Length: 249
Ligand code: BV8
Ligand code: ZN
Image (cartoon, rainbow, N blue to C red; front, side, top):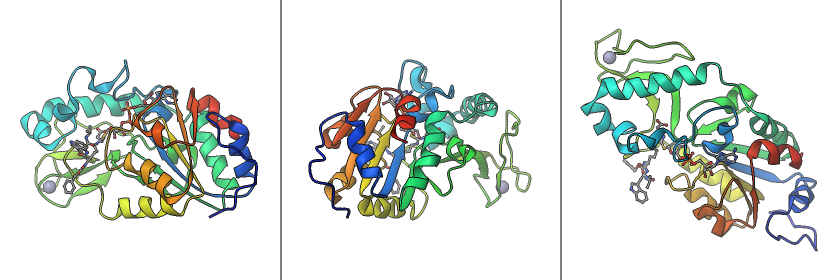
């Protein structure tokens, strides 16, 4: 752990404190949610433009939701894939690529399935909830990472004609094997932990903020509003991540 310079007080919303820590080449871990992609035009899940507005999360992003109505669920995923096709990373994604250069070690953990971090140039990204682009068969081990291509309304496996599903983690499903251990380790080692653009209600992802705080990292939240994670943030910057993150560099 870094020895923080004396007198660096951690009041709420102090960008200078963060810059003081960045000057020490800290180990950094970041958790992002849909909010970091909002300024790219990707609707968030629970905001006023939220995906879940019409239907509940369980209806759409769950195994039983899919089993009950595979056409309807694929219609929703294809709509999102269409929307994502011509969406670009925003200054918030770009700032995280540059932040990585200031860190002695940097781990980016995302709940997002849009791969905008990768498009912006972030290297190793831990995708806790998978990605919308890969598809895999429900009945055999066929899978393919079909980046930005249209899928038929009824995507079927070319090998066994079973239903294909998007490569995301649905509610009630376990996260990809070993990924939380990697994220947990990075957060425990971090001197500085950013939680950006997430409503911090989906677990186990949100729990990383509590882990960071308990492990002694300085916790910085960037969001338009307070969230359950605000209670463990040393610094809470209220505003758009696409505007705040570039100010840190
Ligand atoms: C699991 C992929 C067990 C699909 C998603 C009761 C209590 C605690 C937990 C549970 C519970 N009941 C059930 C659970 C478990 C459940 C859960 O947490 N439910 C919640 C809703 C209560 N979790 C699970 O099921 C997880 N799995 O626990 O498995 C297990 C273990 C072993 C074996 C078997 C099973 C799986 C969760 C993954 C679900 N999949 N998505 C898809 O995308 O289609 S979750 C979905 O929500 C997205 O992935 C998204 O990433 C995630 C979180 O949402 P956010 O990213 O935070 O987005 P949101 O819209 O909510 O918020 C946006 C934020 O941005 C807001 O705060 C807003 O203010 C801010 N913002 C907006 N604009 C900006 C901004 N901030 C800055 N700048 C801006 N410009
Ligand atoms: Zn198959």
